[in-house]
Length: 142
Image (cartoon, rainbow, N blue to C red; front, side, top):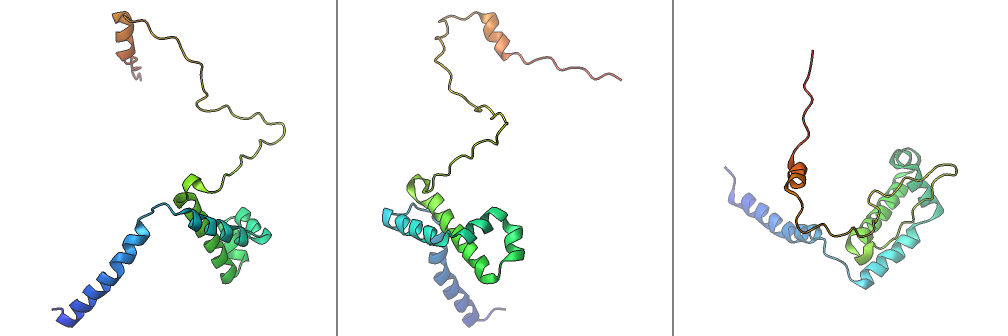
């Protein structure tokens, strides 16, 4: 059976942690000054070495950097995440990389199409039924 002192200590701990958990869970947008401060921190942390580490990936970072440098990478990524998700407009506009020379770029998935003429007021019933009918399924043969 749990003692009263232990139960009250747990309740005090839960009461102290609950407001902090609620604040971190709510991802409300930041004000302009906070976003500007985050942008300044991002520019300060983004050195040539940081860019190399980010380009190499997490496995390279784990094997080639010491704990202090890894913590700096984590801090940079945390700041970038806050800018991306909590600053209006997403903060950083990432430019598309041009396709390598000699390669044909892929087409847009949903290109804009010119406005199609309005459908007639009374389409035929056969055409309407055709749109509803599923294609026949092929039968399996042995």
